[in-house]
Length: 273
Ligand SMILES: *[C@@H]1O[C@H](CO)[C@@H](O)[C@H](O)[C@H]1NC(C)=O
Ligand SMILES: *[C@@H]1O[C@H](CO)[C@@H](O)[C@H](O)[C@H]1NC(C)=O
Image 1 (tube, rainbow, N blue to C red):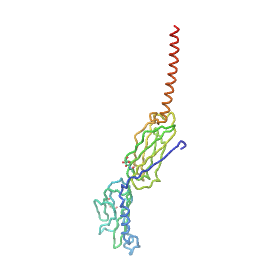
Image 2: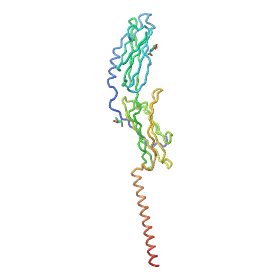
Image 3: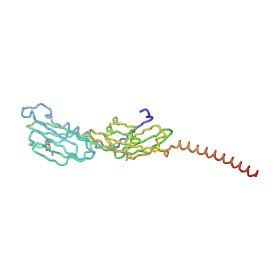
Image 4: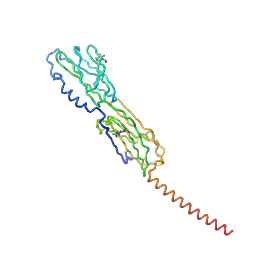
């Protein structure tokens, strides 16, 4: 990217919007985990006993409700025990499975554990629920032409998780700049501002520029775009405006001088006639 002159990026973290207490709850859950869960099996009857939870990994929009299915090859004489900090909803069950609904998931990442006891042996399985929030808005400010450079400023608001966000700038549909925000590992909703400057060329004027935000979550892409903005003379900076008015003043001065000379010549000719 030879024409890259200037680039800066700003990420503002929103006030702790997501549930803060979740980490503590998870620690408490881990401490409660029965010891027998990972110890060797005492007898052959339980050696092939398994517990499974599905899906193992889910990525859902902030505030969604989800279903998790906990099953085992051991007939469920007593209901499986679910350990989660999330709010519980409905429950469905079959001979060797129980399906749990979890409501309004607002924790950015949450582990849910299901424990089944079979012949006095307890085993568990874990599922992870990750959340995301697509950009609330993608706003491209009107481009500013200062000196011989266009500056584009794009705002992406209320997005999460920022490390999966890619912000792209396009001119007449072609990508002129793209930035992946992997290095921002914050765990809150964020506002991102991308600033990019590039040299102005005579054929730029009137071309449309747009800003695009992509949240790439394994297999799932959430996308937002700005309204197009035109690169234009109308957004001249004050400096170029000042220069322009100096030029116009000089031109008017020259015209006045020429006019006065013509008038004098005309009057001279009139007086001779
Ligand atoms: C992010 O942007 C939104 C919308 O412009 C605004 O209401 C909010 O206060 C901003 N948050 C931060 C942390 O700047
Ligand atoms: C839960 O999983 C079991 C075993 O895989 C399956 O038989 C059952 O239909 C599932 N229940 C729901 C509600 O998906």
